[in-house]
Amino acid sequence: MQCCGMKRIASIFAAVLMLALAISSCAKQPSSPNSENTAAPTQSTALTAAPTECAQPTDTTETSEVPTDKSCVLVLYFSATGNTKLLAERIARLADADIAEISPAQPYTAEDLNYHDRSTRASAEQNDSSARPAIAEDISLDGYSVVFLGYPIWWGRPPRILNTFVESHDFSGITIIPFCTSGSSDIGSSDDALAALAGSGSWLDGRRFAMSISDDELLSWIGDSLE
Ligand SMILES: Cc1cc2nc3c(=O)[nH]c(=O)nc-3n(C[C@H](O)[C@H](O)[C@H](O)COP(=O)(O)O)c2cc1C
Image 1: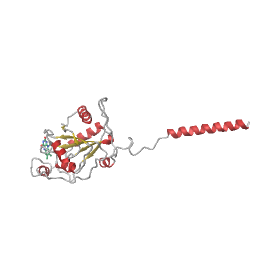
Image 2: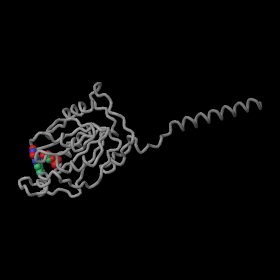
Image 3: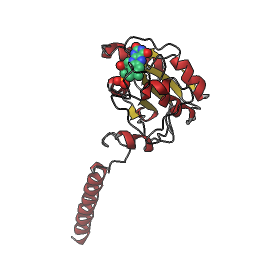
């Protein structure tokens, strides 16, 4: 009897132990700050949260999606009246990338942007090759291996605030993919001009997009750019 009693106690103990182990292995792990469920970072925090290790985007030929490592792709843009911002947001969504805005320390007013008056701020800056409008908040490129860089065309050129940005950042190890919006002008040599000012990084040919571009066309361009 004592022997059977001991065996019974031992088997009950073993059953309880197995149940406890099963419960603990099914328990939800606490999500890490980098897990996919974490709320999307805001423009200001996305940049400080950039990872330090960054895998290259994977091959896109086998799938219609754009399989990028989100943590490594950044869509960075300057936009004064919202067109480039809209396009940048679409690119970020389609590429599943982070997004950040180059914000001027002194925002542009409607009067600043009046290109019918060559004395207004934007026109004066574009006429001054040494103009370097200050940026409100620094943007770190740490951890990014691909940067889509968007801007409007102002008098055939990128706004001078792009000069401020590219001259003050090291693009080593980063592939930069310029894109722009405009009334009708093409991207011209604005992408080459920025590459020359930056002096580092691997700069691809840029593209000008009409606001009417479809998601399919954008997706195809993103895929080609990341190949
Ligand atoms: C100061 C200034 C100069 C501009 N120069 C040109 C130009 O040379 N060629 C052109 O096609 N559009 C020109 N535009 C129109 C803008 O490129 C176009 O509206 C662009 O989409 C604005 O982008 P944003 O809304 O992101 O600021 C100019 C706009 C401004 C404010």
